[in-house]
Amino acid sequence: GVGMGMTAPVSMTAFPAEDGSLQQKVKVSLRIPSQFQANPPCPNDESIKIEERQGMTIYSTQFGGYAKEADYVNYAAKLKSALGSEAAYRKDFYFCNGYDPPMKPYGRRNEVWFLKE
Image (cartoon, rainbow, N blue to C red; front, side, top):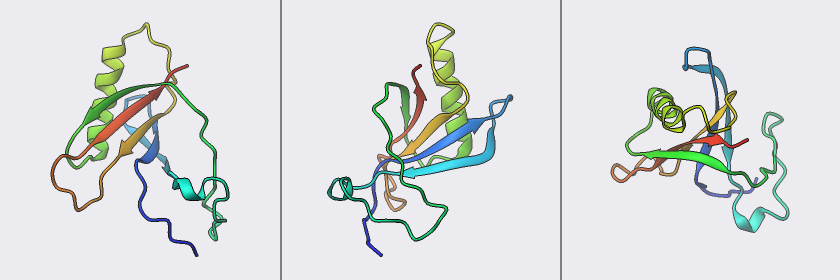
């Protein structure tokens, strides 16, 4: 019953299939605004969980436009290629992040994050 407004980024955990496409299993995460961090409101919907995301080190790439699944898959492949075989990161999932509201037509920011191991 508490409105918290829009947060950024909206982060989706993507689970890549063997061919690089995304599995249908996707987890969407929203940041709880600072004023609610100490005592977040309790969700009314059982499918919504509050998780604490620990600090992490990531490998990241950024791109613009209205991001589609194919864009995230493409930029994840580019990031994987840029990192080569030397970098140690989680390969079973990655994060797809969007920072802008839908009505912002220009200067949009999207990122793909690989979690460093």
